[in-house]
Image (cartoon, rainbow, N blue to C red; front, top):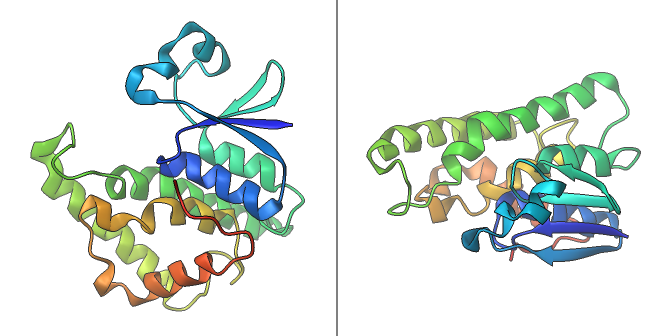
Length: 192
């Protein structure tokens, strides 16, 4: 059975949980408290030398870290990853966008951010990422091929709680509609 080492309130860990629930794959969840240094122990660092969650245990001694790599691995030969090579690349494009242009800015917590002085610039970049999504979703129901995929799961994890980082989704009607469509997917579970 798959085992996920994660933290329930992490968007990156939530991505993995959401896909597993959609797939109806049995898994065991092992809660890991990063705030107490649980990912810095020698046992955990043996599983993931980067000391981060989520980490997926495929079998004893075989681990896969990084949320989007885990999504890619789990989605192979499922409806959540297209078969067309261009569409596959497009899914990966949105997942790279999520990691480099979206999550670093949308996943902020105001007043608790270690780079407090940079918050205005970070928030500006976050709104820029939301604008990219808004423009695309204005003409598409989902990120790729107008069907739900791991690209949507990757972006949903932090977008749906963007208000927690001080972002107002009120000016993004296409994103709000997309959030509702994602929530309507079979097997959907809330974060936490």
